[in-house]
Length: 177
Image 1 (cartoon, rainbow, N blue to C red):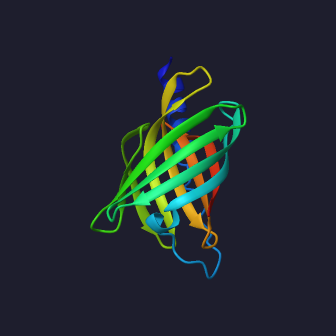
Image 2: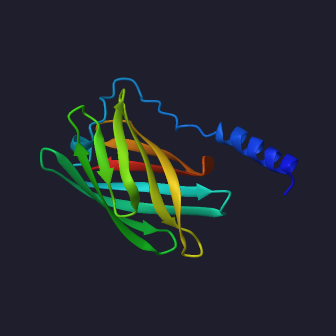
């Protein structure tokens, strides 16, 4: 590859990386701030969709959740059923820090998920190993925002990126029982 072509590719990549945005977070008026350990304690259900035009993926799913809080750590089990019949389970462990933020771990998360209150919403930032169509796992970066809609409904919107470029979106509507 010639130097001018390499520079063009790098410049284009830098421009596209600048386009990566955090998900929007519009909270309806008169809705209380989201507190993870309060909202996700007990049984809940979610409906969602993972979409990637780049990878040609459009998957709907439902997720059953069950959370417990021990005073410091929220343990949140998620049991997924995808529209193609695949099933998967993941367990988050969110440990509350002295400053009110959380550190999260999950089976497929690389390192630690950073979780913080941002006004009435909660934001997560983490890398996870995600299996592609071929079954090969790829490291993707997730920027999630959890937006309370009511006392019993939270919308989770995520932008998924690879090497700084947006490659997918995820949206899940969680409802607590």
